[in-house]
Image 1 (tube, rainbow, N blue to C red):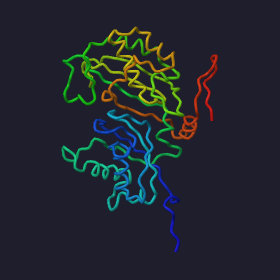
Image 2: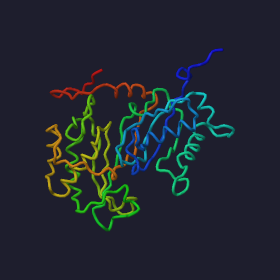
Image 3: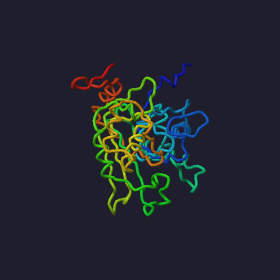
Image 4: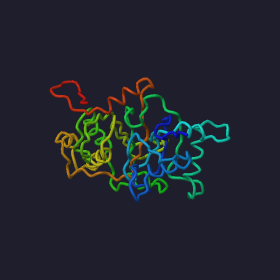
Length: 311
């Protein structure tokens, strides 16, 4: 009698679209002895799918402790037999059944009853070439601030920063426009050995949202880039706040960027005001090529040359 090694069994790559309240998590990444989004979700997947080994998730963007997500994306490789078995005797498809069963596991013991601070909204078999991290073309975050006591909503205290001074939003936005494009954002990142800090900042705009909007009256930054390095968004917000308070001129954040080193005057903004809103991917036939491109190490162009990548 022969046995099949589970590692050699046919696998299905499953895309998960999820959301979470980061308040009670020590960030996304699994850490021994700490409650993390990855740890909680991998445990739930292992239980629901009855896997012989723990599930292993790959995520579009690792979030820090306290940061929230509405549009996070991850993938997990599941044995084909386990995927096919998810519906059991029901007439639901595997994805629909997995979402429902995960809701039951994640909401177990929740308060209010059945509630959870992490929700898987969709599970589908991923197209060929899909990689939640490397195939993404951009990530979009929002940072929300209430700079007026009248705009402080206690029901939103976990995802909106309460700021004690009124902000000059026009000055903040003018400063932000000087940071757009491909740059080495070392001045706004916590360094990680072996990781590049070159990023393309596609959008960074500050607005005070008008009446009738869901966040009416709040000062909101929308930040979009091909990728972000560690603490980059919160450092950009911190520099913007210095401008909005009048402590620094409009051109200061750009000068910090050009200097290329961390500036002690740039305060990293609190985590709870930040939410990952959306991750975008190319058309299915472009997924594999995008993943290869993203894995390449980038270097900045010299003398106006086109951007280069290194294998």
